[in-house]
Length: 298
Image 1 (cartoon, one colour):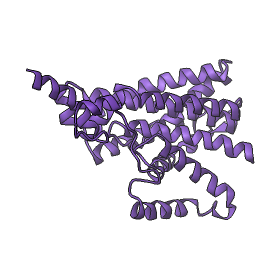
Image 2 (image 1 turned 30 degrees about the horizontal axis):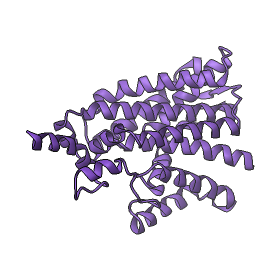
Image 3 (image 1 turned 90 degrees about the vertical axis):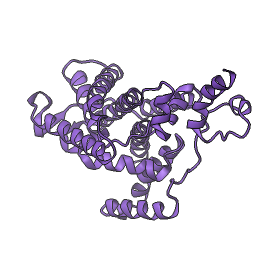
């Protein structure tokens, strides 16, 4: 039980980060359950039918899933708000139905014979992805994503393409979700399209909302709590959706920004000293600071 709990916690943390990196660009996606299915089925086909080792199959699945997500994102980003959310929900349903209708992947009966996931492999990947996100928060790319999230018009005026940033973030999130899907599939031994329904995407988004969307530690806290709590209190298993929804409603009323509400600081202290009075928590102001300085010199 302990090993399974650790394994599923690691998988859910990866899934939460796959939503978090998309939210960093100001986009909310409910397609990550579908991306998880792509990673699981592609990696499963490569390991079971082609005999590839799991790490290599997982990498291939992540790359293919990222390319698919970016191909879908480019036309989808013409929509905004609730319409974009509906597009991502549609993508999740389409992926699920596609696997149900494809005999190569077992159709509605699913695929069997998948194995190879270990706790060490999952948590090694969690540490690698977490390190990558932490390093990203120390780069100018973090400030670019913050600028797009805070004010697309201001970012566009500085020469940043919001559509490009959002597409790259969605592709990165899809790749992480595909890796999580590969781990999940090779632990379950048998997978069916029903394992990747829309509720998977909804739960993952709620992990991030519960933990906090402003820093990379919030998704970790949210995923850990909501994975461990039903396992520790077995009586809640049948009431998991109800308890989950009630917890989210209460949290939104008490702490709208999640359990960890602090924002990741995306600017170095040197940047703040150049502009007296500039708040380092305002990424769009920091992104605009170089342009303001150049205009002042002229």
